[in-house]
Image 1 (tube, rainbow, N blue to C red):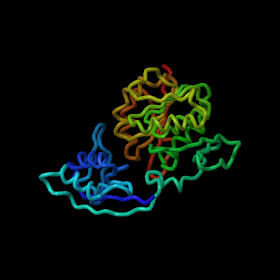
Image 2: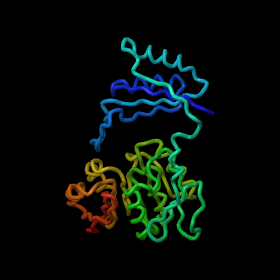
Image 3: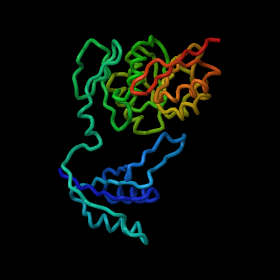
Image 4: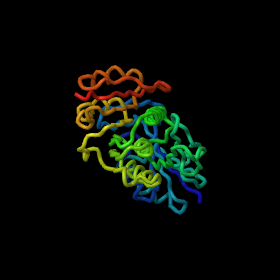
Length: 293
C-alpha cells in the first residue's frame, strides 16, 4: 500500500506540539532530522538537544485526508502561520526497518557469530546469537558493539553474573548468556530497548537467565559489568558502577573515543585500573579487573 509523507521545516520549539497533533491525526510515525546541516555532539546526561532548524517528517496512511491534517495543524499553530511544508507519495515498505536489508551474519573473535533472524548461521557449530534489533541500538555493526562482543568471546564467563548496562537490543547480555554466564541483568532507560532485549532473549532460549528492567532496580553486584553507552554518562556513573561490581569482577566500557580514555581512567582510577583492550575506527574499549582487596 502506498503512503503519504508530510514534510515540514520547523524550529525546535514547535516539534513537541506538532508531533502530538500529527499522531492524533493518524500519522503512524513522526521523525525529526537536522534541517540545516548542524552537527550535535555528545550532550551531558539528561540533556535532549535539538537542532536550530528541524525537518519533521510524518508518515500518513493512504486513506488519510491531507487537507484535514493540515487544517488541524493550522489550528494547532494559530496565531502563527503553518510552517513550510510539502506532501510526497511513497511506495510501501517497513520504513523503520528498511536498513536491515544490509544486516548480514558477522563473526566476533573465535566462537561467536551474530546472525540476523532472517538468515541461517554460516557455522551451525559456532555460538550463534540470533538477533532482531527491533528499534533499539545494537547489531554488532557499530565498532563499539563489535569491540565488546570480541572481548566477551575471549572471556571465561561460565557461571558468572553479568550486568548489561544500557542494553539496547540486548546483544551484549544475550551474547554473555550464550557464552556461559549464569544470569544477566539487562537494563536500559528506553522501553523499546527492553522490549527488543526481552524478544532477543526469547529468540535465543535465554528468558530464564536474562532479566530485563530499569537501571534503578539493580541492587546485587555482578562479576562482569558491560556498559556500551557514551563517555559522558560513563564518567558520571563511576560511583554507581563501583557499587555494582564485585571485588575481582571485570568492568568493560565502550562508546568512547580515544580522547575520552584518559579522563575515564582518571574518573575510575581510585578503585579500578582501566586499559584499552581494543580500538576500531577511533572508538576504544576499556576493561579492567577490580582488585579483590
